[in-house]
Image (cartoon, rainbow, N blue to C red):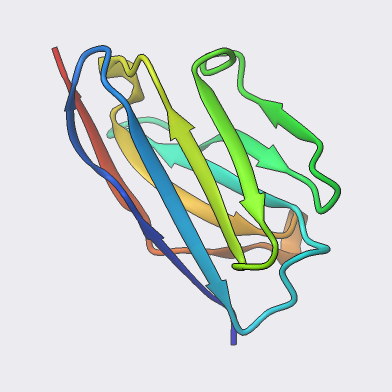
Length: 115
């Protein structure tokens, strides 16, 4: 059974930084695409960033240049470094393994950016 456990969320001021972590267990980690999604109140869930097993990355336009996704296959962990945070980044952030109908989701971690 796949388990994805996020951590690192919290309350931060405008312009601050946070680092989210997602530890995976019960699954083969290294060959899978790992992603971070987010959902703000009243908005649809959106892809924030993704990293392939080989380390290729892609980002939502709204976070390019501010967020960095990375993975440590030895630790079965994916990270999201978030810098220069804005109130619009306030959301629940979800770690996701895989793509399409084969995705597995974590429980989410709240990120709140105050102005």
